[in-house]
Length: 36
Image (cartoon, rainbow, N blue to C red; front, side, top):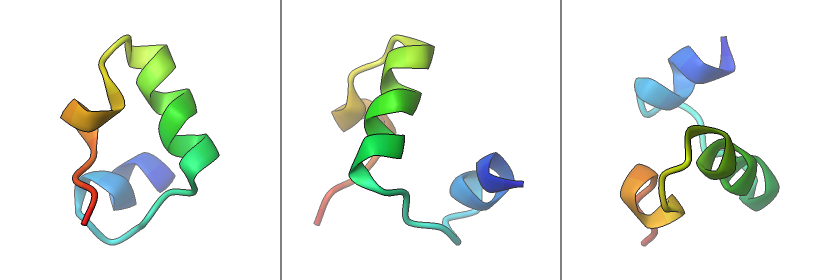
């Protein structure tokens, strides 16, 4: 459910979760998430 909400732009992950996702998919965090 969290992944679905992330993809839909309806969830802002914590920094730790964002880093963990980045590491799992082996993609730099800046390419996955847009930081304002």
